[in-house]
Length: 323
Image (tube, rainbow, N blue to C red):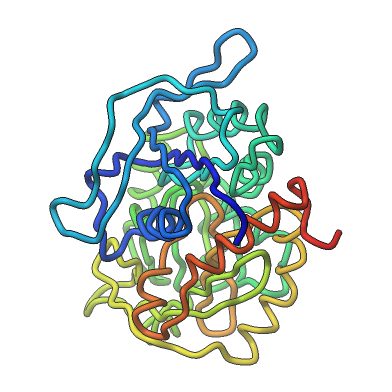
């Protein structure tokens, strides 16, 4: 496994995480088990100061004890270039605040290895990277124009309308061919944000589940199925989706084989893709989830696989091992 590494984790407040579901907590736990040191800070605590990138945060130890899962030292300012690894793990929304952190972290990478690579996190947002694979994805449109959305719905019938940079199922609407709320939703979306939104053909297979496949350095290590709650079109666990075990099928492996080399080349070590039926709908690179559920269902320790890949990348100076 190699020697001790100093690891900084850019994340949402660690005190608030669900230790039985949070993937970042599981990554911290695995790092600590390997003897690595942990320092946590929030995106708001990132500082660029006269050519150097600092973070204001705390050194921590973690344990799997509900309500008492972290011990934290005093708050201090550290130079992130003194660390071996930074995990970029805060949740979206993928807004300008998020993007700014990728610009700052890019200045220390790969001397300090940032996972996932901040340049490609910035340039591979979840609902846009899939556009590189049109034959793997359902019919998709990105627009702010109501007439264009109407024409898309006329072609495809039921549609899904959602914010382009949203997450966790927030703001996702299914609109049937005769739904009269389209104009009102368009008015709501455009009044709240200047960003475009994404429209996709509704896939009825989602009632049987939305498959989350975990890839480590471009290689699939397993999957879980997220089944929507009764009366819901959304399968995200944040909004009541139920995780259940599932096997990778031939189509899943075909999709992974197509996208895996690109993920590996771009330093996107921990990725979660979403597959409904035979179709790839998202490639999640910012803060993927699902590794705890995968480990419970299958025994696959994805956190260990991720750390194996990180340690290999560091030995190779930030490049894919063997390149």
